[in-house]
Length: 320
Length: 253
Image 1 (cartoon, rainbow over the protein chains, first blue to last red):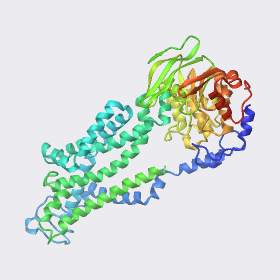
Image 2: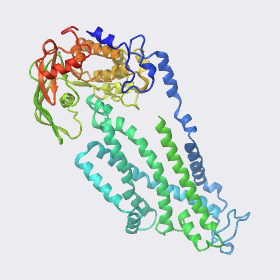
Image 3: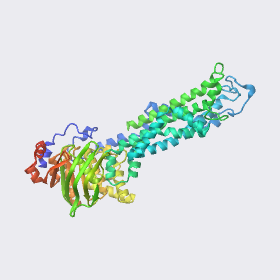
């Protein structure tokens, strides 16, 4: 009877689920069911097209890397690039326009604007970089466990997420900073309490999807432990989304840090930071407008860079 | 529910198994006996509860679906083969790692031993050039090869009972015949017990000696392949037989 079946199958069906690409693989003249080795190596060659090469062909990624790298370099090498001590005051030479001594002029206390911008990048990038770590880790952890375990734990996490999301972001952040006290510590605490919800929500949903995926069920059926299945077969699939989210979150956090400093709740003087610089320059906006505009423009520039980087990474990974 | 050992001489014994979700009862108190070393088929259309029955044997029911009554007795280690080989493998992990992972973390082998074992398993399931294929990703393999890898992953745990959930449905028919022959060979060589779920009586009759026909969560007919295919008692079995393009000669291998 198997002969009958095989005869009936001599004409391969045009379309079969699960084998969309490589139509060549459907026709199997030798009837071995195996792939032509040549075809195999061709596929490997196509795959071998490395991620970085594809990344270089993604304009958003390249632009994001260039912009972000320029800011990071400025921040890291601020002590080398700066022409003055960012905190050194020279009250006799306040509010100067650009000159050979002060490339971008000075603020009302005679501090060099160019040097302060560089050190401001240092402050804001450092705070933003640190402030996303705790929310990222907490959110990924809680979201993954909630999505995988489900049940009561999932319910509780979902309700907490809903509660935090229900508050406008800045209302809850400002409230927390007031409670903890203005300054860097306040920013970290506030963002740790609020920032994790986005990660938790996304990770919870993607984990729940992958948890039901056949290969996860298969891995469980093969006798692998829950922990191993999560770490080896779920996280690698969900983490890409979390990282893309992280890149976009850094933008958000930088803006939040600058905003809090602008409101006087963030970085405290004399530490240079873009937010306080915008506030300080406000009084002179009609005459020395660049005092506020320069740090503001850098916030925008950094934000654009990181957004492009996040989109670029997403594009590159999607292509895989 | 109670999970016990199977009846003496049996690999799997299902008694009065009832499975329900919030939507209602999906499987209504079915019985199933799988003697050790035998190949037993479970046939029915989609939604008949055959896959759920199989999943409950290995304890992997989807979320929200529960066993509400009866018992499942299993003697020996279980392995499972899934319907769609393209999704039963993690796309981000090489197929070799997926086999070695089971060898190392289920069988407790060292990395080097797991690698040797993986090559052996690939040879056993008929994957050519196993050393090279270990490094392939699932998308680089054809459907037939992928299903062979799935079989190798299942065999890596050294199971006594192989649960097959429509393992050939997603394959085209020439490859189907080879995978069926492979399962049959593994059963004989390794003394495996096979529980084979399919909607296709023709496929089941190629592998199994006895078969249970399920409809809407109930077993409507069971017996040897000869009895069920040769002299179907239930009208639903006849419908299934009519659905087979080429009705196989009863009992022929």
